[in-house]
Image (cartoon, rainbow, N blue to C red):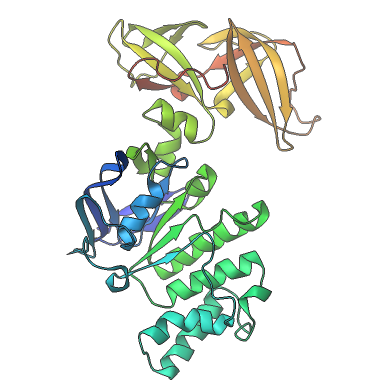
Length: 380
């Protein structure tokens, strides 16, 4: 049976083979390890994202896949062949950069065809591929326009077409949307996702934007200080963070230091909490409890629920679609998010500044992060 990954309700079918394999990749710049012993496998047809803050090593890793940098240790295998020492122009990959890297003195057609002409491809074949690429990016009829006459979104589409027209086995995208405004980024990331699914080409996408990675990717590698902190499907990365760094970097998360009393019961500064039935801790073990702001529930009257405590609303942040409540309880600050609904809807409640509320943390929504209390609550 063909392996599948699931992205929401859409079933993603991937190839049986590996598109890229990295084996123990290390890259140093002076005494600093930019990438530290990274190994991972990326499947044929996968939309794979390298996600992390600036300086975490994600772009350096992408450059080693592209061949622009050579690892000090380890191997880069593409399509089953060792490409570690192979120059970029002989690798079956193409790269789309953040700054477009287009030739402003050339037309759209000339930019897209540049790589094909370097390969001395027949004119008829070049014309056919350029037309195919223009239709692919929804810019037919723009062949004779100069790229400096195009908008930022159009130029990024042209850069994408120039890479795809060479029919690479793997397309590398180095933060290609970061220079665009929010609305255009949202539009293009959906286009990218649909385009990748239509073509079936392996995409490796570098970004520091958590939402971009969550929207588009089959799997995400979250990087920090040259290493992979967590690797897995998008839902798993968000719902089940394994480290405090991942919990705080992917979206927002409240981190609560706790000590185990029983296999499924802990003591915190907010009271004693029960955990999900799957959790099994050693009495005395120190852990962190992670809970997303949207999974915290607020009540005016005390509910008949586990893990309930009192808190005061210290601040309210209105974002349009949401209300964000900053809660203060026993000296600890927590963030809670609720959707902005119509005031007339049954069951709808809004809370006010300094109001005392009951807070409930559902056991199934509390994620246990082992390894002590490193990294206090980001809202404290």
